[in-house]
Amino acid sequence: MFVPSSRLLYSVAAVLVPFATVVGLVPSQAAFCFLIISLLVAAVILDMARGFDSLEGVTVLCPPTVRLVKDRKGTIPLIVRQPQPADREIVVGLAMPAEFNSGDELRRVRIPGENQPSQLNWECVGTKRGRFPLLACYLEAFSPWGFWAVRTRAELKSELRVYPDLRTDRRQVSALFLQRGALGTRIRRQAGKGREFEKLREYVPSDTFEDIHWKATAKRGRPVTKVFQIERTQEIYVIVDGSRLSARQVEAASNDGPNKKANILERYVNAALVLCWAAERQGDRFGLITFADKVYDFIRARNGPAHFAVCRESIHTLQPKLVAPDFEELFAFVRLRLRQRSLIVLLTALDDPLLGESFVRHLHVLSRQHLVLVCLMQPPGIGPLFSGPEVQSTDDIYERLAGHLRWKRLMEVGVSVRREGALFSLMDNERLSAQVVSQYLEARQRQLL
Image (tube, rainbow, N blue to C red; front, side, top):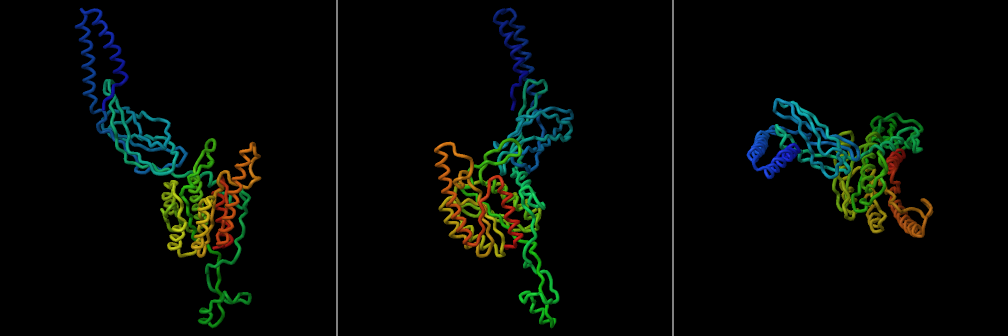
């Protein structure tokens, strides 16, 4: 594609307009004026003919997958080559998705000749989690005399993956692994003797009868006792609710600048990944389940950095869906798939009375076998009557009363959940990840599994 350059427009303005005016004013000079204009036209046409191969053989390569972090500056590496022997300068433009902010729409780059690579790092910021295609790159070069700009499209076939930013959440959670962190948490000695078998030893008078290994006693002819240790490897499953209530907007802490608005699901995704990271540090196996009106992803519990990457790949594309959650199908699915007793951390919202009733009605299917920890983020505007800043108007009083009634119904749901043998926690927005990990560590220390 040929586009007139600024040089062509200036040349036309400098030659065609004055000489056409001279033809009208001085007809005797028409032949000379037509000669000058013809020379300009011939030069423009010849320059176009010479510019047909300006971008011939120019290739642009991009990695098939580019990984970025949400709201953090990243780079897209591009490698540009051209077969001609002489160096040249071209203009590169990327067809960035709408969810990305890039400082420069166009970049000028000088390419060495003879197919030598020239790397271009394109800076951008992803503002939304997920996967986004990067399909094309646009190139522009000038003809030899600069009258024309030659443009073409280069196919890329690359994918941009934007992952959640866990810096703030990990910073809060790191304090829980210290002897005394900033959150005031102290690492306690694990209580109980544990139920994971370690070895056999000779009986001593202080041993209880329930610890005697009767088969070994009969074989050896003398009492033999079983020795247990604290369970070191447990299975942790995080269930993330991506239904309609998770689409509500809340304040989200930002590492750079003022706080921004984000939906509740963003906080759930961060908390789930941070909990998986904490479980990996503790040596536990962790898995992931996402659901809304049905179960979307199920990743069986394992351990290791590679498994954490699998969980991150699965959840980073999760977006809220405007459907009601189906707790009956979720609990039946988990009960059929998980045979070993596990810690189930459920990140959901139950401030809708109908959803809370449905949740409690079907919870026994799961709580009879597993330890269920129900984690709710306190929705905005819901809280005890005399909490928060002072009221400023009559409307604030009515809003506080409405929020108190909704908070009371939520507390009643919590009582019903505890009656079914599950744990119930109402957590803060900004400290959701730290509080979820704290609940997990406490359950592990108390050997509730």
